[in-house]
Image (cartoon, rainbow, N blue to C red; front, top):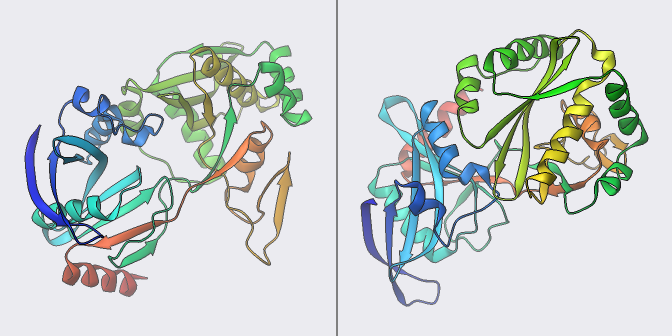
Length: 344
């Protein structure tokens, strides 16, 4: 443990508590902490190391009260022009006013301009002014309860999804477990060109696949890889993170079998939740709504196609709170906001 900050913070009742903040640098100290967030892979030590490898320094803050860790959160440093920086906390656990007081003082000391926060539960009662911003991680996702039997999971799928799984099986599509960034990248290039969406570069996926939390499953047909998925497993949550498919042999429905195979593997590994990692938002008032397999969403959203695909597998919708920013250096924060408005 390094970089210890110690200070007294007035709590909401007016008394004074002694808080200490330290940066955790060891996997053991992070993953064995009583404040660890099992299941939120963005807060895992391994994911922090992966992010470090692609240029975002992890800051693992632990808040101690009387030598006991009462909260921890992993943030990632983002660099701004003029030597400025901010810290991004994805999917952090709830942080009360007293703890945030210590974290805020630490951020001031380290000269961050602001903190960008995406909590896992709504955070209320902050006396500090916040600025609402957009979420970087999916705000709405679809999850399967893996405690159910395979028969129950299949019965919860749309009949078309079950049919497509059988189509892939009848075509003898083979699923291989192998980390191969070259295969993923080739299929990803076809997917992004076809579906017109942005992608990370190849090195990003190479480094992601080197992370011990990730799994890659690839569907083969007639000796050719035709679809590939990357998953993250942390705690009892199995998350589908990235999927690709080639332009050939789309009629054999390989991605459907890939998901079903992954769901089976997740169950066998003891996971309790299968997270599809992102669906389109709920339809706002006056907007056109789509519905499939009892899942509804905003019809004109760019994720509508992938949402229909995921909804076919069943599950329940899970919503995360909105993201927000808290200014640490008000002058520079206002300056950055003004520059954003000018650019827009």
